Each structure stands twice: as structure tokens, then as C-alpha cells.
Image (cartoon, rainbow, N blue to C red):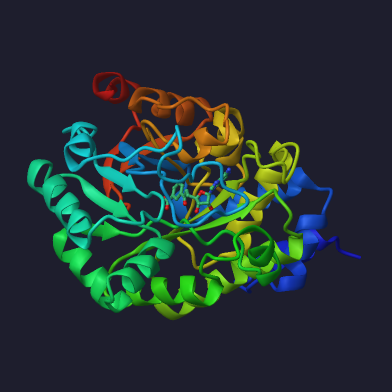
Length: 365
Ligand code: V47
């Protein structure tokens, strides 16, 4: 009898979708190499040996948050020694002419006015018109909608007019009521997260999607999460990428160590196979590290995010990754993995293809 991997291979070769049971069987398989090879074939049929990256900068304007989610080491309260807030000028001072993307997310700030959010985007676009702004998760959009008494649609329209290009994929965590009740009971759940992304897609604002794994979720819950994203993507085609986020345990004591590299690679490979309508699968070096990323590009990932700068969410949870990678380092990492680096913008338009050594050496910084 054919093995589960052989059965799934022939389904994929005849363009059939994977079922929930098949995805679960892949999580249980011992044939990690076979799983990786299959995900790599699917990735190559779409992207050949290309791997995308972006020259970007993450900015987390404040860690003051009205929520206190159990899994989060980043959020704090006003008056605590680690609390911080950035002015628009401070944020501008972190932007520079080489950037293609700024990725802005933060705590749900209790006092900032709606004008801060609009003025911030206008100031970035005025000073750095080439930068595309990918900002505020669905959780933040929902918070603005309630706090400023505007429908989510209106929040998104005003942000778009001020310069928003895309929404990041954060805040999804795991689409499981069991886990929401245990780890983030006051944060929006799956229906509202999906609704905000549906509205964004309707307004022609592309978005990303994430899954926070490696804490207390089951394989069934990981699969259910991916299936709900696949379903919305069938409806809207508005997602650009899916990013599995490996949980950094930090000081929360939810788990004692982060998921293994094999778990990271399995999750990426299964995402590539199950999310057949998701263009990009991102291996995020900040959470899984450069070594695992260099393998992940052979396990189904076609994107490794970007230079990033001073990221604070995972670093608050003691990630061992560096605070910044240069464009040159990203190109080297992709090349050393045997792939072709493709610099992109926030919306996955191609900026440069580094398919010749000379081109790379002349261009890196
Ligand atoms: O929503 C919080 C997660 C997310 C931890 O869209 C944690 O391109 C791991 O969404 N360990 C924010 N994860 C980051 C995010 C993201 C990152 C990179 C690219 C994109 C994109 C989006 O980080 C949160 C939450 O799910 N998170 N704490 C932690 N200790």
C-alpha cells in the first residue's frame, strides 16, 4: 500500500486539495525529508529557486497596552520602568531612504488620539515617499474602531488615504476558543480577525496572515487555523503571505523551550502544501533563527522577511536572533542556501533579482 506521503504526492500532482485528515497525517509523519522534498517541489513549481526578502524596518511605537495577554512579554502598563512611547519625530528618525517597507505594530495604547495614527502615516509618506507602510494588526484596527467610534471600514479607508499599503498578519495567534480563553481572553477571536481582513481585502488593502505555534496548541488546532485562512483566501484572494511564528517562551512560563527546528520545518512545509492558494510562505528569521531559515527555503518557504532593524516583540521574549541583518547578509544567506535572492517591496513587487555574483557584490550594503 502507498505511504501517506505517496498518496498525498499523487493528489498534489493531479491538482487536488489536501484535506484536514491529510494535513494531520503530515504532522504525524516520520518522513520529514520526504515531506520537505514535496513542499520544495511545490514551492519550486511556483517560484523556482527564488527566495524573497525586503529592506524594511520594524517599528513598535509603544509597548503600553490595555491588554495583558498571558503569552506576551512585550506589553506593559504606563509608569512601569520598561514602558516607552515614541513621538512621530522619533519614528521618522528610524526611517531612511533605502527602506522599501516600514512594519508598524504596537500595544493598544490607552490615550493616543486618532490624529496621531493618521499624522504618523502622512509624515512618513511626506518624508519618504518610496516607503510602503504595512501597519496595525486586525486587533489594532478593531481597537481603533471601538475607541474612536468608527466602523472598521472607515478606519481602514482613512488609514489608506493617509498612506497605508498593507496590513501585517499579527494578532491571529491561533484560531481556537480554547486557547483564546487560556492565553488572550480579552483579545478579539477568529471571527473578528477574519472579518477585519475580509474588509481590508474588499478595500484593496492586501494583508498577511500568521499562526503562533509552539505553546499549548494541538496539531488539530494548527490545521484548523490554516484551513480557516484557506477558506477566506478562496473568497477574497487578498492574503499575500502566511507566516508561522514560533513562540518565544520568554518569561511567561507557558512552555520551557521553543519548538524544535524540525517542528518549524514541518509547519512551514505543511503550510506550503495545505495553503495551495497562498502565494508566499515566510520563514521568519527573528523567531526561528538564520540556520533554520536556510533550511526552510528547501522546505517550502519562498520568503525570509527582511532586514527588520530594531524589532522589540520577540526581543522582549529573549529571542537569540540579532536585532538587524543587512541586505548583504540576507543575500548571502539565501545564496549560501543554494537559492536566488529576490529583493521585493511590501507588496511583493520585484525590486532586484540577484542572479549574478557581480550584481550582488555591487549592490549590497
Ligand atoms: O501577533 C507575540 C506574536 C505577532 C510572541 O505580517 C510572539 O509580515 C513569538 O505578526 N513569541 C506580531 N511570537 C508579529 C507579526 C509579524 C512578524 C513578522 C512579519 C509579519 C508580517 C507579522 O507576534 C503577534 C503574536 O502573534 N508574538 N509574542 C512571542 N513571545
